[in-house]
Amino acid sequence: MRDLTPRQIVAQLDQHIIGQHEAKRAVAIAVRNRWRRQQLPPEMRSEIAPKNILMIGPTGVGKTEIARRLAKLTGAPFIKVEATKYTEVGYYGRDVESMIRELVENAIGLVRETERKNVQEEANSRVEHRLLNLLVPAPLAYDVGAESANSPERYERTREKMRAKLAAGEMDDRKVEITIEQKSAPMMLTGMGLEQTDIDLQGMFEKIMPKQTTRREVAVSEARKALFEQECDALINQEKVNAQAIELSEDLGIVFIDEIDKVVASDARGADVSRQGVQRDLLPIVEGTTVQTKYGYVKTDHILFVAAGAFHRAKPSDLMPELQGRFPIRVELADLTKEDFVRILTEPNSALTKQYKALLSTESVELEFQTDAVESLAEYAFHVNQSSQNIGARRLYTIMERLLEELSFEAPDMHMGRVVVNAAYVKERLEKLTKDEDLSKFIL
Image (tube, rainbow, N blue to C red; front, side, top):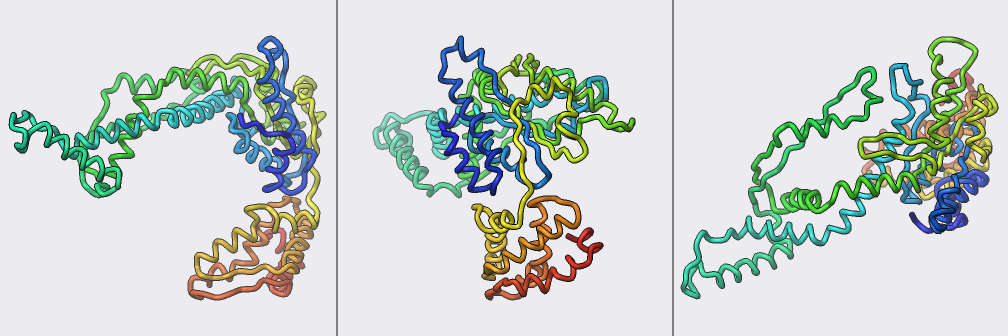
């Protein structure tokens, strides 16, 4: 896990997310506490439980984005799930334990990537040896004469020359014949109860069924990739990967549960009949239990859970008291102001204005946003959010797309040119839409 201080984590998140300082501080401290726990002696480490976080705030203010960026920062096993896709055990659908199985799969990917880097040198050496055998096959029998065509010395000299050409990339277009193992397509098995049974049916069938291999003639550059994958698979100890992945998931895993407010049972009966049951099923997972996966048993006691919800219709207090108690840290994310929209359009590394500039530059069109245009766009986004449904920063996507729709359509035929977007340009394209309440509801 990367050794980042809370200040560094917040600084990294600031590059992509505007505002919401409280939420950033809370997740930064929680992540740092994961690192601190790893430095403690084992007897104390087992006693320290993670402080789970509940993020409360309207849609489009950065809850999911904080979680997504956090995953890239930490390098720890991380999954984002929606609470709404789970059903109570006994109903048809996915049970909450499957989120832990997904976390382990994510951890396996991380560990496997690390192992690949460790065996990369050995794998490349083996690939080179195999390619040389294909390009310069050994003669069936060596001649005794030192300078004859099939003498061992002559063969070694030819092989060394070929090795140098191979390293220089001169042989990349030469065709060689290699054996490629075709992986069978995964079998989709669904049905009542199959989600809960954690038997690796796919793995079982792969062992039973004979492996299909085909001989193909491919370029050396393509053969190198295929052979590298084969050698990595041969060098990596899958049992060791599985064991490390389970340990990594237990100690450093982070699960982000989005839309948790949607599993609060409403008064009406019907489609949400299992919502309260989902909360009951979530409780032991968050509290700490042991989940069976096809790679082994996983304890959830030290997995960090971050839950988020808009809580428009429900309140956090409507959740089961026991579940509320498992999320001791509450952070409220604020509504976005006009000033926030201005910053969102200009400051982040991947701000929308920068994205559209880059997209249109591929058509040799230079796009420039003046300061008054950005102010005007922020004003329109804020106004539409206030007058119709508040969807936060996502409103900027619809506003920007509507603003540049004509330019995006005409750009390929312009061939080259410079387009300056100012407040007048914005007003001309958005004024009519935002004035008409009905139109803005449907279009913006």
